[in-house]
Each structure stands twice: as structure tokens, then as C-alpha cells.
Amino acid sequence: MTVNTPSQALQHLRDTLRTTQPGIEDLIELLSTCLNDLYNDAGPSSSSSAEPARKAIQRFLPSIQIHILTHTIPNYLHALNNTQVEVLRSFFAPEREAKGIRISRWIALTSYLTLPPFLNAPSTTASIPELPIPSRSFLLELLDRLSGEYGVDEVYWAVWSGVGEQDKGRLGPEELVWEESTRSVVGVPAKVANAVGRWGSDGWIGEIRARLVPKQVNPLMCVLTSLIIRTYFDGLIVKLENLMYELSISITAGTSTTTSAAHVVGVPDRIRLVVERLSALGLLKTLPSQQEFRQPSLLSPLLPPLLAHLNPSPSHPLAAYPTTLLPSILLPLPASTLSSFVSSLLLYLSSRIGILDSVKPDENVHRAIEVFKQFIGPAEVGAEAWVAVIRAISAQRGLVDSNNTQEHVIARIACGWIRSGGAAGKSSQFDHKSSADGVERREFVQVVIRLWTDPKSIKFALYSQQYRMSLTTS
Image (cartoon, rainbow, N blue to C red; front, side, top):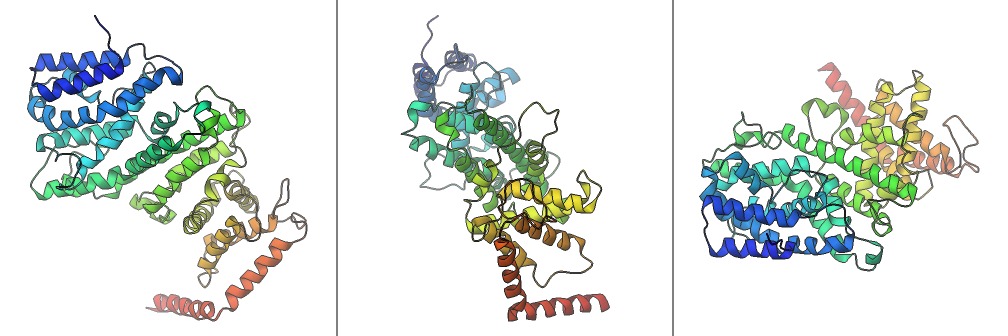
């Protein structure tokens, strides 16, 4: 049996599907042969030896996927058994196995770029044909499987695992693919909601997988519930943190078998892009008090594993995050996004102050300050972190209630962070010598005085108290 190269196999499959309409057995044989050629000897290999397969998948697989969704599924799906349907799925979201994982990742990456446009409203200017009605459930099933098996971590390795030291000077194409693929990954829930709502308004009701939409609920309504979006983004963010930690180990070690110096250098920029996209969707706006409503949130699924990796137990076999990694990711964020992140982080730390290890409240606050410093670095007057914290404190003015413990905890965390200044070594909000010259403390006092003596602050502070009194007496 002749074994074709990946390029020959995919090109032959594309041309055959375009020109003929084989029977079921011939179709499955054709698809299976292509997969065998594609995965043939697909074990560990160097970047240079795997590059032809990557280029072939990028060139030929999108048109094959489009043909399967627009022609093969409507004509054949009703007559295929489960094994034969699995062959079709393998061209979109193959089962993850150690052998051939690189090929599987590239197929999944191509699917993220090809499938979401089918969820858009039909348009005469669209680059792909309209999705046939029999293919709708199959498409949603593929997206469900894709999001479960190939998250943002797998997409990262699909884009960057083939970039070696020799590619440092030409990272442009990979950067563009990373931007487009992350936009597609974070946009899946919204596109699914819009598409199912539009299809449902036309009377369509199909079988939809649970990760995207619960089967027992009308698809027109259920995709709009935050439960589904929360489930999707929780999984995405957990995988993002796993990716961050895996890359941080590579940065700490200096070398790795899975990553090269060419893309380790750009790790903060690429992780920051995902954080920006999640923030743009409003995932930094959710308050801890809204968790019972299952609103999607960035920090709720991110903080538990991140805090565990920031301060691992002595028995933990791996090292902690490098001290500079999180600040290098967060501080270059746009000012508005960084301020939102800092405000949300203060809210989450203050809301969980009672569940930290120590039973002493002062020690709990001190631990929260240390965690806060690990995220945004030490206080430095005029720096990005300083401006973001001042904005967060400014948002609290006029709203401090003597009975509101959380607001006081937020103030203590922020003040402790500023008091610690940029001094090296272990510092505390009780250590008056933690900042050598007290510049940060003096500047912060001036900021507070300006805030509290601002006429608008006084006006709205009085109105807020009057508003509380009216609610109490009504």
C-alpha cells in the first residue's frame, strides 16, 4: 500500500470530494485512508520534519471541512453508524492521543478558524456557504467536543510548538494566527447563542450537546442562560492558568523539551491578549456576591489554582510562579482594563479574607497584601499599578460604611500595599521602615486628602448617606 505525504493525501481527498459522490463505504474508505496517511509515523519529531504536515493542513483542510459540513453531512449522516460518524469528526476534533498529538492540535486549530463563521447570519458577501439545516446539530456537537478536548492551552501549542530558535526573526504569521484563534475561542458562546436563537426563531429545534446547551431545555432559551456561558468560560480560564504555569516552569528552568526560547520570550504578551479578550466580554465585572447567579467571571475560576501555584506547599514537587511573570502580564494592560482587574482582585481578596490559612484577621490581611503584590508588583509612585490602585480606591470614596467589613478590608489591603513600597525583602503593613523614604505613604496621603476634599466627593458622600437613611426609614 502506497503511503502518501500529508499534502498528497489531503489534496487527493479534497479533489475527490469535489468531483465525485462516492457511496458510503467508498466515502469512509477514502476518509480513513487520508487520516492514516496524515497520522503515519506521527510520533515525536522535530519542527522541521513536521512543518510540511502543518502547511498541508493549513492549506487543504479548511476546504475539506467546509465540504463535509455543506455536502457530506446532509447527504450521508442519516445512513452512517457511530464508527463512521467518528471518522467524520476526526477531521474537526480528533480524539486526543499521545501519538499524533501535534497533528490533532493542528486539525483542532483549523476547526476553530473554520467552524465559527458558519454560526454567522447568512450574507451574500460571506466567504463560506450557508450551513444546511441537517448540519446544524452536527456543527454544535463539534464545537462542544472541540471546546472540551482542545482548549486555549492546546490552541497555544498548536500555534507555537513548531516555532524554533531559527524562527525568531519571522514570528509574524504565528502572531496573526494566535490573535485570530484566541478571538475565535472566546467568541464561541456568543456565536452559538446568536445562531441557535436565530435558528430557533425559524422553528428549528435540534439535539444540542450539554456543554453548549442542555438538551432538556428549549435551545432558543437555554443558550441565553449564564449557566452555559459560565461553564464554558470556567473551563477556558482553568486551562489558561494551567498553560501559564506550564510556561512559567519553562521560563524558570530556562529550557524545556516542549517550548523553545523563541516563544518563551513572548509568553506574557500572548497570555495578556487572552486576558484582554476575556475582559472585553465583561468577565471582570462580576462581583463575588453575584456568584449564586452563576455569572461568568475571570477571577472566580482563576484564583484558586493560581494562588496554589503562587505559594505551593513545601511538599509540592514543582516551583512557584516566577515573581515577575504576573506583573509582566498584567501591568502592560490598557489602563481601564488594569484598573478593572485591580478593583476585581481587591473585591475577591477581601471577600475571601476569612478563608485564608491564618485565624488571625491581621495575618489574613497581611497574606492578602502579599498576594496582591505578587499580582501587580510593589508600589511605585506614578507607575501603572499605582494609578490602578488609586483608581480603585477613588471608586470607593463616599461609599465607606462603618458596618461594611469588606470595604474596610479593601482599604487595609490597598494601604498595606502602598505602605510596603518598593523595599526588598519581606514587608508588612505594620513595618514602618518597609519604605526607605516614605515617598509612597506621603503621596498616598496627599491623594486621599485631594479625594476627600473634592467638592464632588463631599456632595456625593452626603447624598449616599442620605440615600441609605431613606432606605432604612422607608
